[in-house]
Structure formats: structure tokens, C-alpha cells
Image 1 (tube, rainbow, N blue to C red):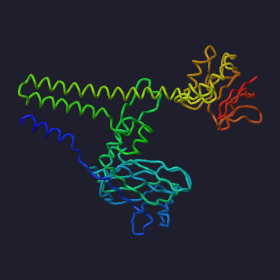
Image 2 (image 1 turned 90 degrees about the vertical axis):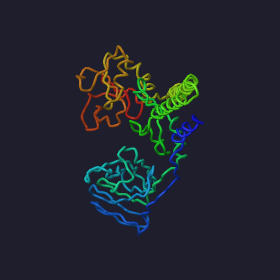
Image 3 (image 1 turned 90 degrees about the horizontal axis):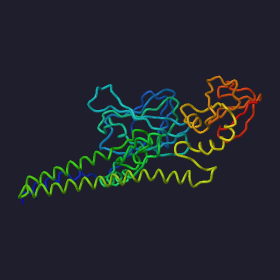
Image 4 (image 1 turned 135 degrees about the vertical axis):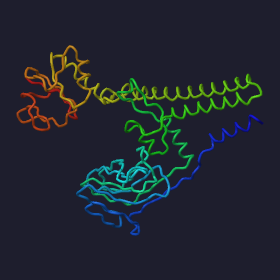
Length: 386
């Protein structure tokens, strides 16, 4: 009895969650009774479809003390009329100076049809639903209809289910993956999980925080057994078994998770590079570069030097330098007057004029007259100069 009571109390504090039910709130701008405050917007009109916002200057819609409960995702039901735009949530973090505001931008594609835009405010760590000032900012040139906004709060069990799913959500292979992996992350809504690795660092909670907490709890339980068992010897044995079991279980789970991610990279390589026919192969972050490079090499190797004209910060030059040796690549900024081969990679802006010379998107002449040896489409080709 002396052992059972403190142990049950500890477990209760640890395992009983602060339960809450799912809650949804909706702001319907098609309802004439719903009020907003216009600030620096050229035109805001209410129609059957909602608020039609047109603005030639940056501005925002504004509310005071707008929220009555926390929420996990806000969904804007909008019609974007002209071009894509990047509005932003604007709020005053509680406890900061009155003129301090924070922003979280999101993207709306150009689409004449109605679309739902999900925003996760907690992507910004300064978010608080208890803010006393909240607004939605629109950049100059916006032309958009907001029909309504839904604020959704998920239940505890829904969040637990999403956390488990996100634990098994993997990143894609990226250049940093050879040395570093983000590891498992927890998110608590389908929207946050879908966007987990779309921006870096990922907007999630590292699973390591939970693992360390569980190990710490196991240590506390082990200490309870040590101090409250009839004998210290028995308590030490039981406590050691608990701590070691928890540690090994977490180790195995973590190893399964990370091993599965590594295997997912291998399966992706098999599906996208090993199995497809040669003209459909793509490889990780390089797309179809290696397929095209291998097709180019027989021609490139006939030249001592060649020029690589590529987008800024692309890996093509470095990869071709390795693959084409002893043929040596050059940059367009070097003296290329005696070079007779240009390798143009992913430059859709390059044009071939009536005089058969290459010109960039600004009309700058790059080469003497020549002709295309091989054209791979999408601004990628070999250009030879006699």
C-alpha cells in the first residue's frame, strides 16, 4: 500500500490528458451582420459571395479580441480572381508592447474558382489565440473574395492520432540527407502533417522531446520503487528493469523509424531511377539530369573544353565536371572565344536568334553563330560553334 499510492498518483499526473472536445467556429462574410474593420484597403464590398477585396496599396482587415477558444487550423474559403498573392496573418502577441505585431504569410494560387486555404498559426512560435488584435494583411494588387473562415480545434484523441501519423511521415532525400536527418516530428493536425517538410526547419515538435520525457519518467518510477520497496535490493532490481526496458523499447522504436526512412529513400530510387526506362529516369533532387548527362557525354568528350550555361546555384556544373573529365567545363564569364561547344541546362530563357547565335533572356548575345546538336527539351540542349 505504501508503494501503490505514490505510484498511482505519479501515473495519474503523467497519463491523464487535459481532454477537450473538437470545436469549430465560422466567420461567414456573406452574412451582413458580421462586422469587420477596414484599414488602408482601396475597396471592400460585401456581396452574395462574401467580401470582395481590391486594393492598390498594402492593407488589412482588423478585429479586436476576436477569438473565444483556441484552434489548430484556420481555413479560408476564397475566390482568387487575378494573380496569385501572399497575404499574411497579423497579430499582437500578448505581453509585448502595444505597437509590436507579428506576421505569418501564406500563399493563395490564382484560380477563378472557390478554394480552401489552410493556415496553421502555430507555425509561428509567437502565436497566441488570446491576442487582443488580429488582422489579415493583403499586398497591393490583391483582388480576392473571402467567403468565410473556419477555425478548427481538434480533440485530444484526434491530435494523438495525427501525432502518430506524423511520427511515421518521412522527409525526402535532399542534399543535406547524406550527413543529417531531421528525424521524427510530431504535428497535431492533418494540415500541419501534410506540410511538415515543405519548409525548413520543419514546423513540428521533435519526437526526441517525448522520448527524453518518457525516459525521465521511467527514472522517476524506478526511484519510487527503490525508495518504497520493502528492501532496497528488491527496489533497485525492479527500478533497473523498468528503466532499461523503457530505454531499450524507445531505442528499438527509434531505430525502426529511422531505418524505415532510409529504406524509403532506397525504394524511391528503385521506383524513379532503377526501374523506369532510360527516358523516364529521375534521380532524387537532380530530376532527369543524369539521364540527359549520359546522353550528352559522347558528344562532350569530343571537346577539350565546353561551356556550361545553367541556372544560378544549380549543381549541373559540378556534376558535369566530374563526369566529363578530361573534358573541362567553363563558366560563361570566362574567355570562351575559342570554345566550340555550349551545354545549356534548364535555361528556358535562352533564345537562338535569326543569326543563329545564343542570347539570354535579356537579349545579351552569348556566342558566335552555330547550331543545335542535341535538343532535350525544357531549355536543355547542346550548341556547337564551327
